[in-house]
Image (cartoon, rainbow, N blue to C red; front, side, top):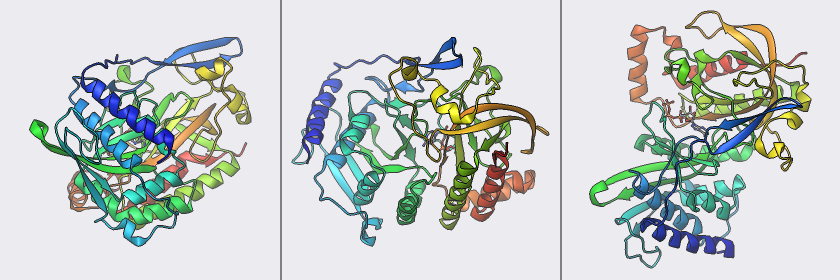
Length: 442
Ligand code: ATP
C-alpha cells in the first residue's frame, strides 16, 4: 500500500476515535462559500452561494452511520489489492462477488477498534468499482480524504420522491445516495454493460459510480443501509444559478415550491424551464451523438425514469440574481465567468468538456400553456456555462412502474406521465432534449 494512503488510514482511525469521544464539534455553515458575479468590469457583486445541507456532527441521527461508512470506505479503499488491468474478467461482475467484513468495537485482525456498536460492511463487486475509480482517474488517497477526511459529510435536505437520502462530501466532489434493494439489483445486473459503456465513451453523460456498499448496523439502530457513491455533477468552480431536472414528461413536472422559496439550490423541473439552449456546432454535434449513445445504452438495459440534470451559470447576472442579456461572445466566457478565486486573480478558468462547463447561449422562452412542454423562443439571449449529466439511472420498468403506468393512464394523457416503457421513455426523452438544445446558427 502506498505511504500516503496508509498515513491517511492511520490518521483517519485516530480521527474517528476522537470524534466519537466528542472532541470534534462542527458548526453548520450554511453560507460558507462566496462567489462573485461580474456585471461589468467595474461592478463586481460578491454573492453568497449557499452550501447545501446540514453537517452531520455528533448528536445528529446519522452520525453513527456516517462513522461506519467512513470506516468501511477506508477499509475497502485501503485494502491491499494487486494492480489490475482495465480488461476485467466476467467473474468480477458476478452478483456473488461481494465481501462482508465485521467491525467489532474492539477491532479485529483487519479492522481498527472503534466506539460505535458492532456493524457489518459489505462491498459489492469490489474489483469492478476499484477499476471504475481507476478508469475515472480517481486517486485512492484523494477519494479517501474526500469521504473519510476531517470534514464531515453533509446530509442534503431535500431527498427526491423515491425516499432516498443524499449525502455530500464537504468538498462537494461526491454524493452518496441511499438505495432500495431493487436499485442495487439493477446496478449489479447492468454493471458489466455500464462498465463497457463508460469505458468505450469517455464523454458519456451518465452518472459516474465509484462504489456500492451496505452497512448492517446492530444494536438498537438495527438496520441495513445500502448506498452508492457517485460523482457530484455540480462540483465546479462556477456558481450554479439555476438547476433543472428534465425528463421530457409533463405530469407532475412543475416545482411544488412557492416562488418565494425558490433559490439557486432549488431543482426545477420540465414545466419550470424557460430557456432554449443554443450550442456551437461542434458542441452540439458531440452532445447529440452522446445523448443518442447514452439513451441507447439505457434503453437496452431496460432503464427508464432517468433525468438530464442541467446546471446553469449565467455569465452576467443582476444584483437580484436574474440573468442579464449580453453582447459578449460565447468564446470569451472562460475569462469572464464569476467565482471567488478568479476575483482574487489566483485560479485559472476550468476547462470545458462535454457536460462540464460548456459555453452556450440560453434564449429566454415562454411556455405556450401551463401544462405542455412546447415553448416559444423570445429572442432574448444570455451567455451561460452549462453543466449537465444523466442521473437516476437505476429504475427498471418493473411491476411497480407498470402498475403506475396503468393507473395514471386512466387519469391522464398516457404520453405525459413519467412511467412508460423504456423505449418510449428514451424516444420521448430525446425528442424533448433535442427541442431544448439546438445548434447555434448565428
Ligand atoms: P425522484 O424519484 O424524485 O426522481 P430520486 O430520489 O430517485 O428522485 P434522483 O433523481 O437521483 O433522486 O436525484 C434527486 C435530486 O438530487 C436531483 O434532481 C438532483 O438535484 C440531485 N442529484 C442527484 N444526483 C446528482 C448528481 N450526481 N450530482 C448532482 N446532483 C444530483
